[in-house]
Image (cartoon, rainbow, N blue to C red; front, top):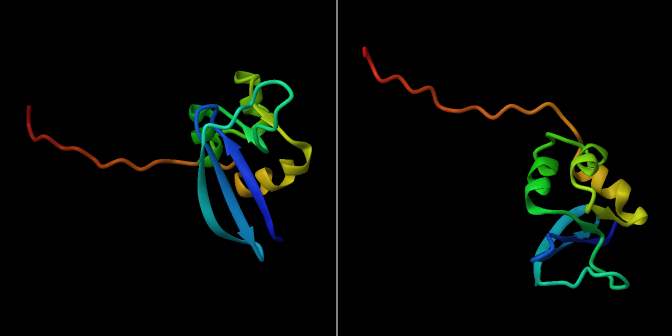
Length: 101
């Protein structure tokens, strides 16, 4: 699989370049217009929703319930689902012991 995936965060966009099924590079595109009639990218998503997608906290369909402005091209849907699957995640934090209080 050799393809590009453009993720637009509405103020900043990034192009993920895949060659032979591996991530080959990430390019910053700057601001990319996503208004009606323009090609804003393959996935248009707010930054706070992208964090939830990347870490598997929510899938794309669940995120679209909370952020209706998320737009994805049908051709990129399967790739996004494979790259960012919904999964159970747990972030470990350090245990803080401050002694007897």
